[in-house]
Image 1: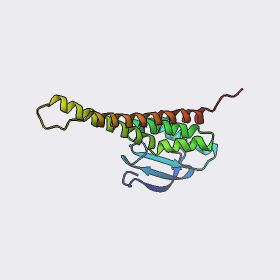
Image 2: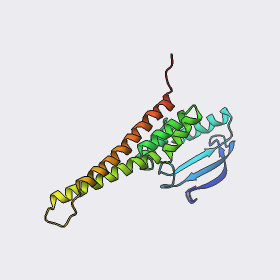
Image 3: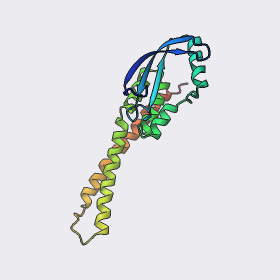
Image 4: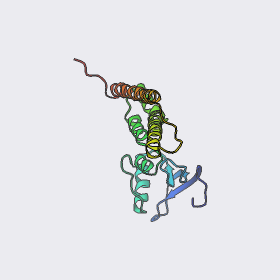
Length: 183
């Protein structure tokens, strides 16, 4: 595997090193950093699904120095390595926990980054206004265009409206995710 490119599949066998007996015929999926989900080199082993085979393979891997991943560890590593933002990470959790088509659909929208894009657009607009105001205050003698109060009000009102829309979608999302209590 050391010489193989990422995004490749390799057919092979897993043997018990003590007895030399073949345990299973497997396919290894190789993902190289930074193009993997976690941003790290990853190998996935696809073996036959019997509980006995899975346990044997797991025991062999652990005895060879591997350890079982913690719950949510791959998503945590992806977040730490900058592959996901918090909204996408929460979307993954929501997708895993989804019990209805609507819940899964909302989670997929978060994974696609639509919410993150909207939040970033508001952030960038506000940072732009802030930078323009600060530059005008810090360098009054330079030829920095003054932001007219009407334009400033309009820009801030537009961003306020976008934030209100995001907040209302949050409330709707909570209802989809948590349901409604009915007596």
